[in-house]
Image (cartoon, rainbow, N blue to C red):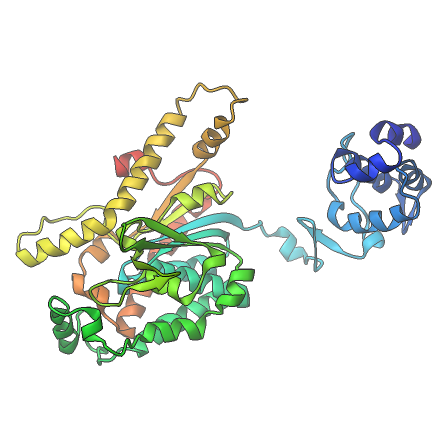
Length: 443
């Protein structure tokens, strides 16, 4: 029986060697695996390998492929029984040898993949710190891709660094260390000011209307650079980041969006994403000038669609989508203009997603058309959001520049509370259905 199946599945000699990575390789290995007897290869396995012209070389090949194909359907003619631990002495998950799970671990559901889109907002990014802390503590999700702008980029990098160095607990610690270090770097005492700026800081902001960053800071002192360099191992992150990072910055001479990916990560890419040009010097990367990513994407959502396989995207929003009052004073009008400018690209992108999802729902295209792959991916996207319009919208605009541990921790706690409420009411929807109506929110 095995001999006839093997002869149908493969061709002898050199042709088999050249096609082992494809269908015939799977069939030969499937026949061999199916005939394993204890720790030894049974006659059927030896015969299948012999027909393939592999001889003793086949034994080494089969041993290598045990690790990859154990418990999977490698035989196109039907399921292959999983190898017993007597053969390999290992337990496997997704083709990787792992520690034997405990009964408690076996009963736990696998974490669901989730992409994150993290908005910028200066000090208000501490709210996102709290959201991430709650998601990490909950443990129901893994993160495939994270797109971030400005403070969102800082949170994204700290999340990736922490996950790489110490898993979920490491990520929570990395976020705490970053925001604590930023608070301690404040040049002025704001411990009692929380939501408002120290008088000296307010005076410096007034000077920015008349002086350039080079004039205000001729020595180019930047505590944020020092913090990032100390806390993030960019060389290792470029090689081993457990998540796909997408860091947004704006080309200062064209207004074009630049997305920096894992292999491009550096302290300068993060500083570019958070560079407010009236306060910080323009960041040069490969000789090109970059400003805050919020001018072109806050954040960019499209990389999570095009470059990630997870269908669920969670938006963590810091800029209100709707304000309760219309500004009347000259100062309030200027503030609102800045906020609308920073949010306009995000609103336009989300409107595009809403429109595309509406169109693919009415698609009549046949399955064989190449474009149908795009349609299918778009139709299965599921959006979710955590926001706090009332809370963050009520804060004074200058609070985005506040550097106070008291303020950061208060926002962190608010972020945790909002995330926990979302987890309780909508967390189980991830992987099943969208909880954000794009048409209603962005049309």
